[in-house]
Length: 229
Figure (tube, rainbow, N blue to C red):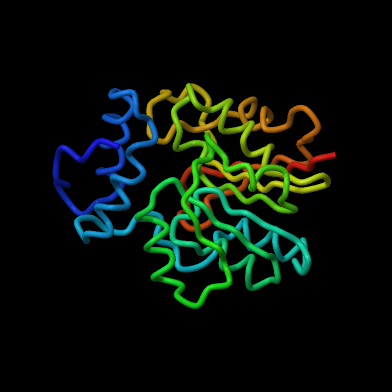
């Protein structure tokens, strides 16, 4: 992994992520920027990215509707600081949360020192064998849209590979407006790209558009639910 070649110009993590993400793609290392921004946050050079203290509202709604998770296994893709994973564990799921960025996992462990969640470093695009085909619930929030389009089909297929038979996946991305410029990060998804999560023996059960949960007038969300046969 290449070292950061510049220092953040401000504490705005979004600005820093945009710049580092573009550089990483140009350098042919399109996932490099995740560790770059998380390590900068760990050094207190930028504000903590994706620093939610509570589970994302659509995740909470889904889990409320799903019920208790006893004897069920869940995984959170792109764990960040662990808010969604902690909710799943609190509801009884045996929960693994992974992120490609070691600094993110370290920060999540520090934030939740007594957690029942297993936090680990792993790459969605190179899944460890023990994670394949074993989860009753897969939660993915904004990870796929953070990857350039050249990696999208592999990332979407990897989400499917995590599912156990009869397992469900909750996939949340921002809606790409019609005619919007295809520049990133993030590389937002249109309807056909969300529908592409359903393939092989994994079926798209529901695809809804929801308002931004915290910012009136912000981009709406795709909320997709998938199920393996």
